[in-house]
Structures are given as structure tokens and as C-alpha cells.
Image (tube, rainbow, N blue to C red):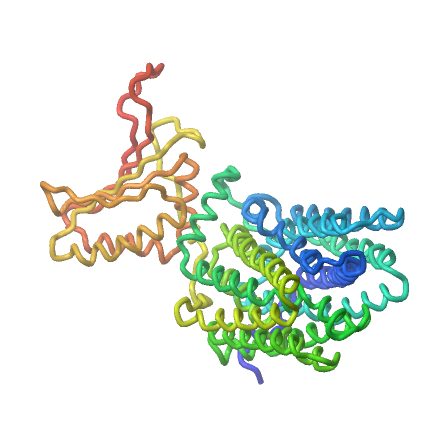
Length: 546
């Protein structure tokens, strides 16, 4: 019988959750329609434009919104009802598809119109995807997150094996207009599932963060987390290097293999089939290999695919090559997505996912444009071979910038903080707040104290502390002061709500290092402007908390 660890990592375990299952399958149906529409748009662009760059930009146009809007929609995902954000994003996608269908029915179409509606579809995806992925931790237990992230990639790429082939058949038999109409109806499914399902979300007792503050906190957390930074950089470079596989595939079908939309759909089906098989094997691979090793293998697989496409002379060989590329594609993106999820606490996960999406989608969009330009100015073979070489360099980058998986770390807040009693009438927006903690550290403990404070600086800055400093009294060397600021009184409380049990453990370690006769003493002060008249005669504006 399988043990508990095996069951926890099983790919289909998240489907036992009815809310996740309903939204997941409805999303696959809409993805089917979206992929059919992508085939129709790409093939339509091939038929009405002679520019290889314009063909490659169809994919770039749908990914650029995730780059430009990511940090804003991430802050929205963490501060507003994620379910409603998803509904708005899906509604935008359906509206864009419906308008495109109407324009096509009226005979209005040109290359820039195709790019414009691809861009609008991308805006809907950019809005809904971070909220959907951030909601996984609300719907599911943490141990099921790796399987859920992999399942999303497997589900999409399973549909990828059907949608393009089906889209090619429909385009060939009925034309793009019917494809666009079917896509529009396909978006009804996820909207219905989202409307009928609701899930419990842990609500904060504090007021909602201001948008700019939320953006600042998200960017700061991402910049401090070494795991997330490494994942973002590797993902961006992987997308930039390997984007040629999908971006130039219409050109491979038209110019190298001399096949029509049905043949193009078969090629995409080969890509999706490889992704499906790799996804099914993903739980076993995660137990066998480190995440870094999996990314290296995935990069080599995509490089082999790109190089094979550069030399392929038959549809069967190209489809087989694409199955290898699809396997590498889903393995890489699943692993990278899991890393971001597991390295992010719930209060910031929407923003970290959005920043990750911004850079990785930006990499894919940039790669689509880059390899399209190379193909147009040199040749399709040169572009694919260059992409293969660049993808191998991404694999080699692991020697200098390895990624790690924090699957065993606990990042969730302890939830044990109560705001201190104050003697001033502080409002939620009162501030800035200055916090000082005085330590009396014997000389023999100074080195250990500094090691702990280095960790403390990262911890406090990660959850919202600004201008953190550590000072030492030159006249009384055993006296140290830790100082930081928060913009408002609410931000001070929010900082402590975000601390984990492990973070708070440092307080106990610092107490042990301190002089037993002089325990750490904290002062919480609110800054007030000097030199202006005050209506109140309130004396020294600070609160002391021992």
C-alpha cells in the first residue's frame, strides 16, 4: 500500500476537493476554446501577413499584459476577494472573444487587430491567473500544493494536445469565425463555476493595505527572498531561450513541413502529449531528483526539441521532437511554480506569483520577438538552433545560480500578536511609527548577537520594517539599539501579524544573550513634526512597552 508521503504527493490528490475540482475542470474547458482561438489567430496571421515577426508577436501579445500589469494585479489578489477578481478577469476574456467574433463576422480584420485582441485576452489572464494560483493555498492543504501546481500545468498541456488539433480541424473546415464563436461560449463554464462555488479565506482583522503600500511590500519581500529571486531569474531566462518552440511553430509548419492548419494542430498535439506524460510522472520525479536537477533535464529536453525542429523534414519527426519539448516545458514550469508557492506566505503569495509571472511571461514575450526577428533576418533554422544553444546555457547556469525548494519550511504567521496598550489616541493611519529595542549584551556574546541580528534584519524587513538599523553605544559598548520604522500604526500591527513562530523564536534567543539584570526594552514612538503649533499640550509622544 502507498505510504502517506506518497499519497500526499499524488498528482490527483487535489481533485478530491470539490471546489478545486469544479473550477479546475471548467478552466480546462475554457482553455480548450482559448487554444483553439490561438491556433485560429496564429494561422490567420500567417495567411494575411508576410512578416515572420508579426506571426511570432501573436504569442508575445498575449503574454505582455502579465509583464506590465503583474505587480498591480498581485496586490489586488492579496487585498481583495480573489474569487471576484477571477470573475472579472474571465469576463474580460469572454468580452474580448465576443467582440472579435462580431468583427470577424463583419469582415473587419487586419494584423494589428489580431494583436490587439490577443493583448486583451492576455489582460484577462493577467488579472485572473494570480488570484487563481494564490487561491490554491486557501482551498487546499499546504502538502497538496506541489500536486495542485503540477496539475494546473498538466491540465493545460493535456488540453493543449487536443485544442490545437481540434482548432486546426475547425479552422480548415469552417474558418476562424466559428472557432472564435466556440471560444466565446467556452468562457461561460469557468464563470459559472466561480459563481456557484465559494471557499473559506482567512480574513485579517486589520484594514486593507493601500495599493502602493501593498506593491512596495510585495516587491520588498520578493527582493529579499533568495529562493524566489533565483526562481524568477531562471524562469525568465528559460522562457526567453525556449520561447521559439511555440512562437515559431506556425512557420515550421508552413515553410519547413509544408502542412496546413490540421498539420499544425498535430504538431501542437505532440507537444501536449509529451507534457501530459511528464506531468503524470512529476510526483515520482520530485521524489527522485532535486528541483535543480529537474530544471536541468527539462532545459536539455527543450534544447533538443528546438534543434530537432531546425532539422526536421517530416511531420512525424517534428511531432516526436515536440513531445520531448512538451515534457521539458511542463517539468520546468511546474517546478518553478511550486518553488514560488512554497517560498511565499499567504499574505504575499498573490504578489510573488505576479512578479514571477511578470518576468517569466516577459521572458517568453521577449523570446518570441527575438527569435522571430532572427528568423526573419537570417533563417528559421538559425533561430531554432540559436534557441537550442541558449536553452543549454540556462541549464548550465545552475552551476552559478541553483534553485532550491523550501517545501519543508513554515512561512505562515503564528497569529499570536495582540496590539500593546497605548496612552495616546492613535488612529489606524497615525504615524510614522518608530520602534527601538534596547539590548544589554555582554562582550562575550557580541559575535553571536550580531549573527542573530543579521537574521532578524532580514525577517523584520521582509514583513514590513523600514529603515532598519542596529547601533552600538560608544560610551557603553554593551548597549545596543535596534531601530526601524513603519508608515502607520496599522502597518506596525500588520508587521507583527506576519511574523512566524520561528521568527518570534529569535526574541527568546536574544533574551538569553542579554544581561540578566537588564532585559531587552522596547519603545514604540510616533513621530511628530517639530516647529509647528500644536493644539494639544500632550507631552512626550511615545509609548513604552517592556
